[in-house]
Image 1 (cartoon, rainbow, N blue to C red):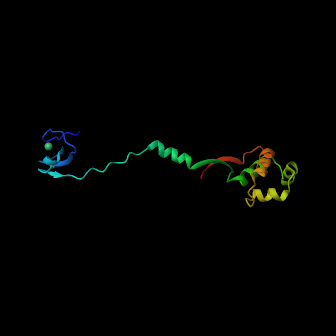
Image 2 (image 1 turned 90 degrees about the vertical axis):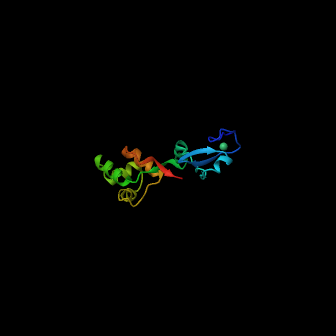
Image 3 (image 1 turned 135 degrees about the vertical axis):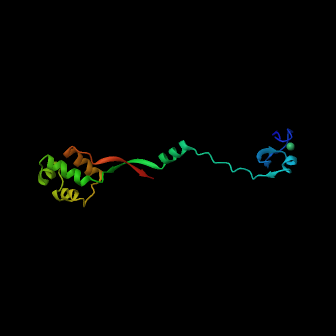
Amino acid sequence: MPICEMCGKETAKVSRTKIEGGVIEACSKCASYGEVLPEPKKARPIPSFSVRSVRVETLAFEDAVVSDFSKRVKDAREHRKMDFKTLAAKMNVKEQLLHRVEQGRLVPDFGFARKIERALGIKLIEKVEEPL
Ligand SMILES: [Zn+2]
């Protein structure tokens, strides 16, 4: 049972009441001497950790071919002083495919990307954060 701060009696309900410049919790009888204030809006607690977990739930770490794959392939191939023909032969793929990959006109699928990774010793597939 709340207690009226004005008369000290237990009461079923107290109201925030402005009396003589102060704000007290007063019973309905005492509240009539002052000005009853509206119920304070309850500030919603911010569930900081659940916000973070929501973020985690909406992101997935997925394997994806890196966006700068063409540069990586070109750099690695040139670094190894391999021409397209040699690399294509090593990978047992068409030379033209490698041209298109280096030009960024062909995004290799996982299978092809893995082949290039092995042939050049580079990484083309990485885990990326993707919104679901
Ligand atoms: Zn009272």
